[in-house]
Length: 481
Image: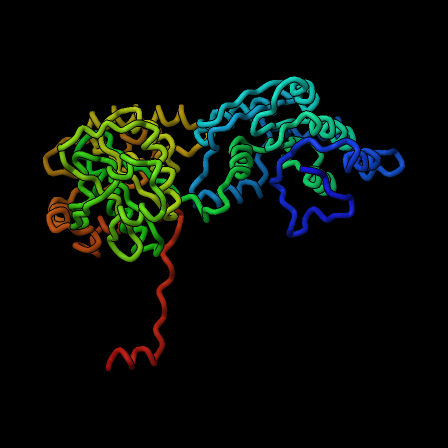
């Protein structure tokens, strides 16, 4: 963008912080900005050096090996974790670091699952290295540069970068001066974001993804994937009941997606037999929009929508990984919570969906096969998602009469996890609910299983049930009539 006049307030409502950082004619406002760097009128001349020897922002505390994240950053990250986490689109990102500490943080950020679709390259050299690199090279969609020089020198180098930037390029600057005046000047010049260490990899990822958020989408739904450590452990039953509890107990909208195309049971559990479902959406992902999505889903209550599986063997369901990825991304815009019921199989698309989910619930029974499979899954998830919380472990069907079982404590220690929920065995309750096409809370609202499912729903959604509404004396009189 062309820089605005120095008298313009960058926090005016008409100002767009995400405007493209593009080259501007040198005979226009850039010359005015250069004149502002004169010794007699430089507003940043009195600022302290960007790298004071005694207060380097990357220096760890005396008793710590690495700088601790700012508590405000952690609070914001925790609040936003209740919603879905957006991912970066298929763009090219170039990062130019000035310090090895920053390079290590950005390298971890680039390996995050939310940036797996982007093509990222990382080099040393900082802001000046970026200016030299783009003399004869086209700039990508996003450029991340670090500069540890004084603010006046940083602005001068940004002017040089503006001359070689292509239209549409967004620039994120990492600096050392935590100063509101510098921030305003950077925003005025078209910089998309300014980061000051210390920051965690997830905070960098969030800064990048926010630049490409869809303004027409009100939110990105939180995606929760349920998968079984082996067949028959009850992962589908728990997924259906948790989705129902999120909508009925926590009073928020949710979408349940049955991904087991040939053998899905969500339609049976909710006593529904829709004509269209998730298979139709996967067969035409490019045509799927909010209107078509609403036609394909079936209502299972005031707040719960169901994408049912066809549960037939008339076709082989040879669907590409890209179709699953595109459809799940679009469904996330339909409700605050999206619960995925994954089948017990291992393929390219199940791996992709599993690792791309915001929350992962592994359901197992206390036996050796479940322990081995669950450990393999937990190890894989920890390697592939180093910046995410570990998956949640649910031990189901605990206490089957006459069956030898691995103790709960030993099971958790072998995985390095504390079970989020231990569900006792209740064949009569679960069998009656399955045969009647009902939820556990409908068959046994006061049962321990119903209370455990509500507890798991609160853990996953990070919400508490709304307080009950108090009825007035007049309303009770009308009810009596």
